[in-house]
Amino acid sequence: MIKVHHLNNSRSHRVLWLLEEIGAPYEIVHYKRDAVTRLAPPELKKIHPLGKSPVVTDGDRVVAESGAIIEYLTKTHGKKTKLWPEDFGPHWIAHTHWMHFAEGSAMLPFLMALYASLLGENAAPLRPRIESEIANHLAYMEGALAKQDYFAGPDFTAADIQMSFVLEVADNSGRLKDLPRLAALIKRLRDRPAYKRAIEKGGPLELMRR
Image (cartoon, rainbow, N blue to C red):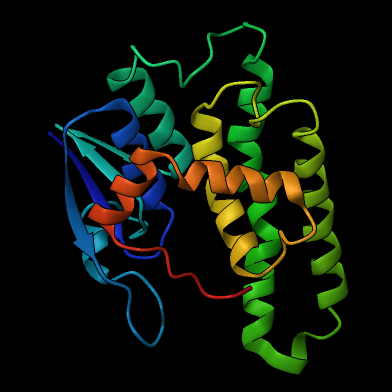
């Protein structure tokens, strides 16, 4: 049985959503953030040394990192779906790009914005650069949807699930109001029945503003 070690208000929502999309049976092990520090509880270190979520256990396998988990689950339990383009197919490179872009590029300036907000005026010199990087990434994402409905092509794929957390963070901070394609995409994603089931089972995403 797949077990999702799920932290509230975290990236592990993507894993629940993926499992709902592929129809694989799973169990949720719930963890709560510390109300003051917002950090994951120390119990997660018993599952993986980093003590972060999401982490998935599947028998004796332990898989960490959202992108790796999504790839593992799709390729082992979702082979009958079309969520992962075939290698060297027409959408393979784009799909690979967006799977890595989400955490490799897009999330970094949002995390910096969060930390800057905690520092107050001490972070003032950094804010222009942080905001310019966020704007650059969001404009790039908006442009990618000029001729297609989803990031890796005309169809919904695992890359859209991976990219969804970036959209959630951007929308939460009011940065999608002038980006109609991204705003329309996050609405389509949230309207998917599997997305809604993941929210029902894992709890709402109540993200801090960045």
